[in-house]
Amino acid sequence: MKKQIFGAIVLIAALAITGCGNKKTNKKEKVEEERLTLELNSKRPVNALEEFPNRALIIVDPQIDFISGSLATKKGAEAMDRLAEALMSDQAKSYRWIFITQDAHPENHCSFKEQGGPFPPHCVQDTKGMEIYPRLHDALEPLMNMNVQVAPMYKGDLADKEEFSVFQNEHSGEKLRRTINEFENFDGIDVCGIATDYCVYQTVKDLIEFYPASKVRVITNCIAAVDENDTKLAKLMKKKHIKGIEF
Image 1: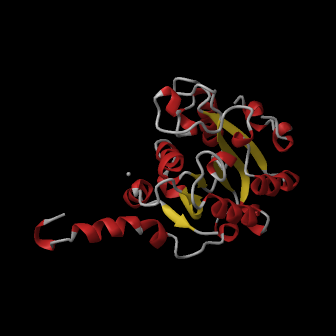
Image 2 (image 1 turned 90 degrees about the horizontal axis):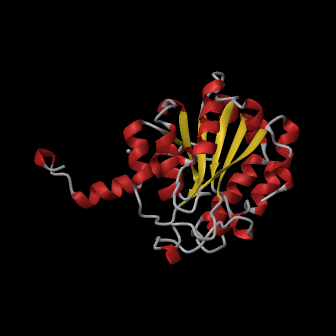
């Protein structure tokens, strides 16, 4: 995939650089509480520009197949439209670095049903479904003129390996870790994208293994899930005290 927005981006190469007892807690109520954690964490909208003028943003898999294609999420378009709108506003000035992860699967990827996996074919290399959601793509392009570094990070490009997180990809993961570690002036990293219960969850989980959870935020109204009842990310945020914000 050779989108013109990314053709001139050489940032990465240049760096070469998640009871019972006396309290008698009702199990059903506890589950419901966990399901609402994301919403409760994000009730207070945050002006990232005022609080953190130099953050990085990781947008997880904002690809056509996850929005209107073979593995579409119910709220994918809504979430990415909101993100695009935010990035076209002053909100974008919060970020000096935007990393966009993308599935780049070969036709015989192990996650596909035809190969014994759980998913229909999606985000196959050199197909329309692998491309960035058009409205978000259009919102990202002008940011390069604002000195924002925009870089694609590919994953899932080996037929026999599933990679829900970019950090699980040997090539892209190493470069992204190095970039994050070498820029000590980061005020923090925000994460959003698709899908909440798979790649967003795993990306956040892997990120906080080497980066302080206290400096990570999840943009909770710019994510979309395959299973909207899944609570993995909510539990992780609660356990690790990861902030939720809204745009």
